[in-house]
Length: 484
Image 1: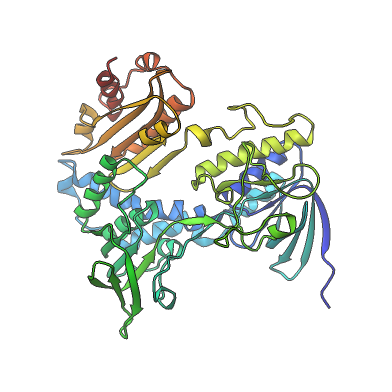
Image 2: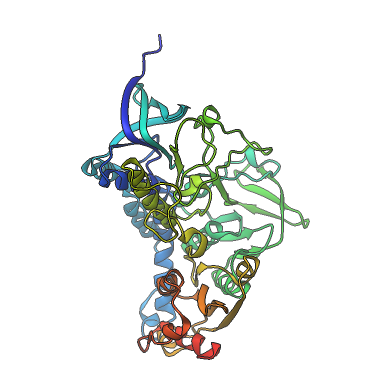
């Protein structure tokens, strides 16, 4: 006999206890509501254990070593190779050895309840959970259910791939050893970062991509990253499709490419994008059906409210990767903060309808100022609109770009190579976007984000004097080239 579910009521039920779920739950509790988090895996989510933190922990030692090797006086004092075991041990530290005790303590200390199990909607505002301990729960939400379930990797339709013990990004970032030969399928951010990380750890790496490398970024910036990969020995097979994969008798993997060439690897890493993790959540019970490709897609407004959910009132929200707008942890946390505040305000009658842009309840930055960093060496950092995107969006846009060649960059590293671009709204004379490529340019990005969000006029931005000698002097050179 199936036991009767344990029924409990909360103001807000959050499905998914990753970074976005934690943030939305924290904000509604701060707003005076009760909240429960439902999670089937580790509290803290993908970023903490298999994405942002471990991947950056794998990358940073190689970047630090390379930085020393390109600085006279330091390069004579360092060895030429990384200690792979020490790098992996440091990675383990930053994942808390895949234990979530500290995250669970934070949830409890914040006043949020935690239910470990797999959740599904069975009706509007009703979530049933199959607890990992065998307990069945029925959670009723007075005000909102929030989907913060993250994303799952795409699997490309490659013949034989399903029969090979391939890595996804999870397996790569949690690997206990460094393969002698690694084939990376995918030229996006994760594939590019992990290709360089493992090359610097000692793997012979081949990166295979159907299109170019980092195709959503300006070509000049992507070329600098490609040069950095090649300098580390990564073989780039770009604009090349993978047709077939099969395992050899000796445990290696044979890969056949569309151009007729082949290669052999000890491990294959598949990094071909991600999609919102919405399957199995019972969305069909509240009015949603898969599209022609069999995938569920949600539309959200500027508070994260999902349009088209059945039942009375506005109750279903999605944040982070589940919303499918921007697959960045920092942007998901931003969405969660705005959504949590909006839910609390609506529960108390303090918010009716669509909030004003740039208010604390609105995710306006999603439209205008999404920042992102590719943590390769050199780094690639961008915020806002590219020139093409700005023009497609109807702006009278121009751009100014130049190599990063200032006193700060020459001091930073011998033979420093970098590139910078500003995208400008000619009608309002404000920034629409910015891109920087080069060693350690990620720390330039927040200044650009502030300028885009604040719509700082260029003639006022000219008065923001960069300290000398820093790489930030490139801001002055860009504005001078523009004509200020």
